[in-house]
Length: 550
Image (cartoon, rainbow, N blue to C red):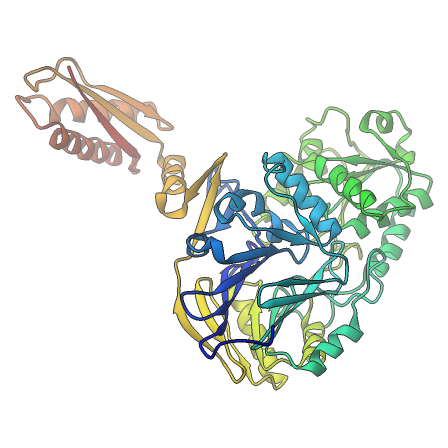
């Protein structure tokens, strides 16, 4: 690994996760310009929001720049198993076609996604032991255990002939994570002693003072809280936080309650954790029908849907459409989670549905039932004291988080702090990092089962139809280019008088039609129809004119 050419460069390229929280995708290249070998760290999604992107389930990074040189991609390395770090692998692998590496728990969850996508016969995830190492071309990667809100998170020490980069993935400093490995402080300090060129680091909580707190503290608080409750209890949170699931199960058992998992993600996470040797002392799990037969004081439901997802278990419980789980007056729902920005309306609507039925609601604002999985400012400062990089590279955050993170790094005397944006290519040199190019980047939408380029405008069209409906005008022309019948107007999502006004305007626009070019006629009628709709309604619907020649 120590041999290299004077033309070789070490470069860093974020294509997702900079300027946004989610959709993490970062690439490292080594070699001369035009002939670099690449590794990809994480390949995640960002979930679409119906108001902004109707019909779009998830968003993924546009990876065409790397896809064009996929023969030089040595592999995708997953730092951990959250959706915003692995959720795009099954969708983008057919474009990238490279090996995938992960520690056992993460590999198990990726394998499940590949199986669902019909790719399991084409791609087998290569497992790296917890705390292990991996050699890929000019890169050697050491997996260093850290703590987060999921099992087996890793900081990657990416070693190259031109220096070492520490890539944190998501992390926090939890002195008692309850499940999995503790932060390997000795290896982090040793890494810092060896010399680190750049620290590419999570910025999510860079504006939050202090520390994030420990899962052990949540366990104590949640256990005490469950003991004070009567009636049925439902706890909702992030299914990926296996330590929290274990906490809730132990709290249930401590107070004589039986636990039922409600929601596919809960069941998948518990199953994967058990297969990987975790949750050895997890209590017996009842199915939903068995739990429904128990006295209210004897049951605790562990539910998906803390963010108000309409198809998740808790949303169906809230609107009383779940086939087996029903909550009523005197029952309690504990939200052991935070509100992710953008989900407020859906979550509060669900709160209102539950409250209308007399269900008690307890959130992190009422009791100590949640801690973040990301580092606050004191934890960030501690990481910099361990690693002591020459360059700080804040990622995994909106621009305000990255800027605050960079400012903190400068206060901690880091020689250079840069704030990357997706698509910017940086040279990481021993003395300094510098921006050397910008490559094609952006987002790709998963629209149903189809990947759609962001610029194709489907979401824009759907938003327009949602605001002012759809207006379709049909014209039939005879062989001489004259109307062969009366115009037909179809209006969807608009008051009936609007369609009547449009029909009158279309009839006037075509009243004296002789021979006409179909394209010119369509544009003339479209303008007349939209103008009439606006005059009658104050809105301009999306308008389509269909001209058929017979």
